[in-house]
Length: 223
Image 1 (cartoon, rainbow, N blue to C red):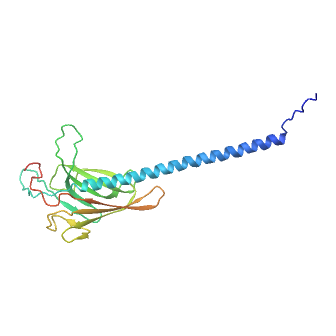
Image 2 (image 1 turned 180 degrees about the vertical axis):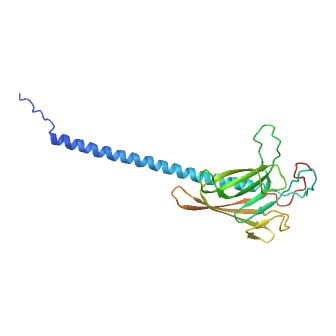
Image 3 (image 1 turned 90 degrees about the vertical axis):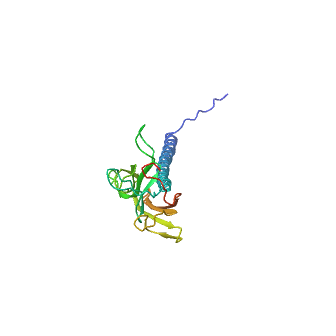
């Protein structure tokens, strides 16, 4: 019997196979790199949307807890505790419920002073949505307290206030200055944020206020 002829790979065949493997490897590496970049971009965008939604939701919840009191404190040795709601086109200063003590047995009530507006964030050096909170009340409900950045890189923040008696939106609301002595029934919030790709996106929502008429108990926590 004749032995079968053994066939060996030529140098050209080896070079062609190596080139094909190199091309396939490069394509796989490029595909993997693109997949990782796309995953990172999606996660970054999702995190940015989550932060915007969380900031808007927090404003909605806390603005809904605004209240006024009919109690009018007098001077003397007693600390004057004033309630109010002052809304501008780009800022809200108010008194509301919902303070949560952060320290056990902290001598704080559930009342607080709140503000929402835009300012420069010292950490990112961008225009940002900030929140001011002060536990308990004093005679200046639009000053003092602790300032926290809720959302960095914000282009604009605008509020509008629904007057149920006039059935119209207004850009200003001063419960004391205009002698309204009442709250708007709704607050419209429009926020323009810069997304990760550099484009601006507008977010709009509304907060419904539950306590419109002034309450007839003392702001200090007693009837």
